[in-house]
Length: 272
Image (tube, rainbow, N blue to C red; front, side, top):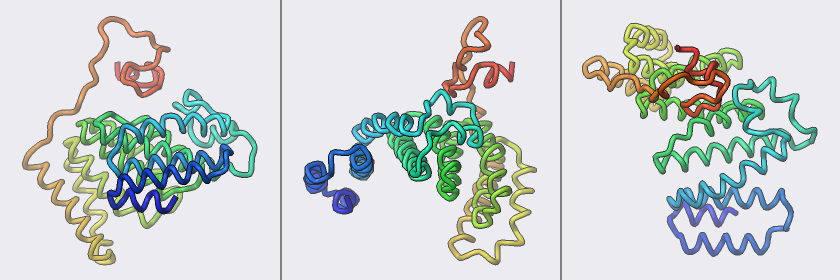
């Protein structure tokens, strides 16, 4: 596996595929081993910028992990991690399988993103499973990636929702001190994109007392975020993206037209 990914990271496509063939012939024909092999193949293909084949593998692998855990995507949509935990199949490897599913969803999202396809739902699911596996560093990283994806689509409300409903409560409740400054400065940028400059300035002001304790890299990153906020004051970003609404009355219990997976009444229907 290490050779597969090492060749792929260095751009040696032929050698990477030869190594994959060797792994397929050597790995035991058992589901646990095959799932790990498939994930590593997908990672290698991502490194080789073969995003389509990467997403094909992850698309097939994700349902395997859902089935292994006794869950379905429909069960996960709109359900908090604490409510999902009792629904899991019993088993000693739950934490590992939860982490593996989250890793696969994260990789799938990255591949979709490179193909300029919205990957929000995959990242939302990945965050839930990282939380359930207590992989909190990964939870925060994926949350910030999701917020950036919303910002790139000019969906500032979506980005703020990720921070306010997920990331900020998590760093408070889990005491994730190492993430406070990166997350809160990132939140300030999202506020500035949404035109909430007073709130963005207030966030940055709260972080000033901690700046001297940062590493040089940390100070540079904080300064970069500060400059983004200042730049947005001078040149406003495009307006908030609006999902085209369907014409006529929309069934309140149907899945929302925006693709979130939630019922309309719990998503865009709340804004009507």
